[in-house]
Each structure stands twice: as structure tokens, then as C-alpha cells.
Length: 112
Image 1 (spheres, helix red, strand yellow):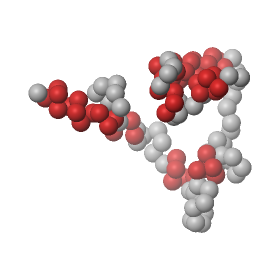
Image 2: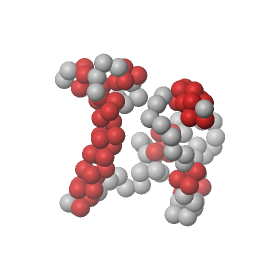
Image 3: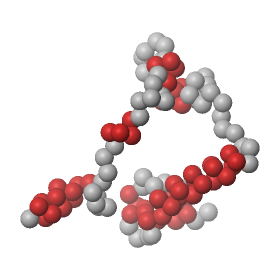
Image 4: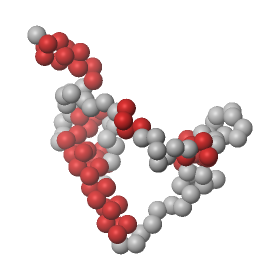
């Protein structure tokens, strides 16, 4: 596989922003993955059961490695309010498609 193609799978790589059209493709990959997941689900494919609490490789196991708490994670606390408390209410929309460090200057120009 060519290195350029490998970069397609790593949207966080700064190099994907320069010298290629890859950065503009990242949103399309997310949409493609969502559509594929829906098609697979419709066809009867299922995901991992107990994806959060699975002892080896589950979400909570992986993302709590190295903490000194005992128990390392609390499944009940993690899922509490999952269907009631929507965190998306607090999301902010980026006003322009530019690097975050340039937003201050863009805001100044817009106000002028």
C-alpha cells in the first residue's frame, strides 16, 4: 500500500493538510462509515456485546488503563442518564472552516 493511501486512514496527521486532497475527504469517510454501518446492521450484522464493560479490550478497560482507582471504572455511573442527558446540547459549531489559531483574526475582520 502506498504511503499516501495510509495517510487517508489517519485524519489527525498534519501532513494530510498539505500536498494532497486528503483533508477534504475526511468528512466523506465519516459519512461512508456511517452508511456502511447502517447497511451492515440492516443485513443482520451485530456489534460487540458489552462493548463498555468487556474485561479485555472493552471501552472502559482500554480508557482506564493506568489509573490508580479501585475499581478502575464504574459501569453504572458511566451509563447513568445515557438516554436522558444529551451532551450534544453543549456542542459549539465552528463559524468558519479555518485553523483554530486563525479564528481570533477572522473574528476581528468580521467585526470591522
